[in-house]
Image 1 (cartoon, rainbow, N blue to C red):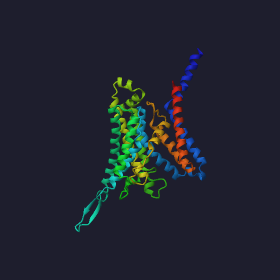
Image 2: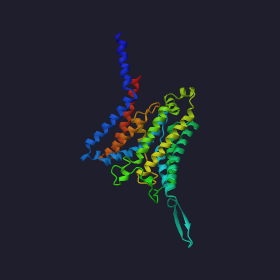
Image 3: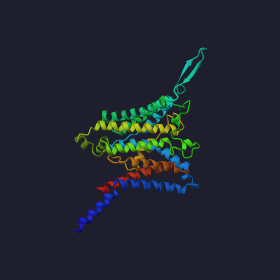
Length: 360
């Protein structure tokens, strides 16, 4: 009679440690450990100054926002290698619209340049915002439609569109950086607030871009947890054939998932535009897909599909940013930083695999 009770106690303990709350606590503990590591080793306490903490939040906001969509895609059993190119395309689109100009000829026959921002100072930034997000949404839709319509592996499709979208960004920018004529509120989305000398700007407490991330994360978490689409995403990632037999519209759900990935990549593009100083840089966000995927994996997402969480991905983005910025401040060569992040990604996958085995 003692053996069943002992087995039950082991099962209860196992279930407790594999619960979502314990997983989240584990990720958060890892975040604190990484932060304390660099806080102790970086000289003169520079790592935990308000300015540096704010810089960590600003940089991680770009990764984390893009990771929201990537989380959904990976849970559904897919992958998107084009997210960095989508961010760059969004950045260039915003800058191109803000810098749009055309020549006119005056009464004396002299050519003059008219900038649209001078004629529409209020409307044009909003137009640039909508266009920057929509072009990324369209890119995400193309990814999803191609995966579903041609029945191709997402890795191959998004590897191809990574080059296509990057090429479009370079073509739109004519292979050079775009410098808008005037700064607008879009340029200030990621400006520091805590260390700002403007008291009106400090009222925000956090940069507006970080608030956009927080709101987006809440919306994404609600979609995954409480909507039919969220349940379908988990079902497809767990077992696509079973989900199809149960009546799940697999094709439409996949297209919707990649489209949402494009939406969040577009929002990340707005943040990136501000973060790099309000310029349209077609070479921006190179290799961001690696950081974004790493954030999801470190946050508990399984590349096999069926697992992942929004909170975990945000924590993963913070860990990636702390590693990157901490390594810079300690003077690590870039190759060392990349190697460390690679090791951590592999370790996160191994830990996830061991956790799955222990749960079964």
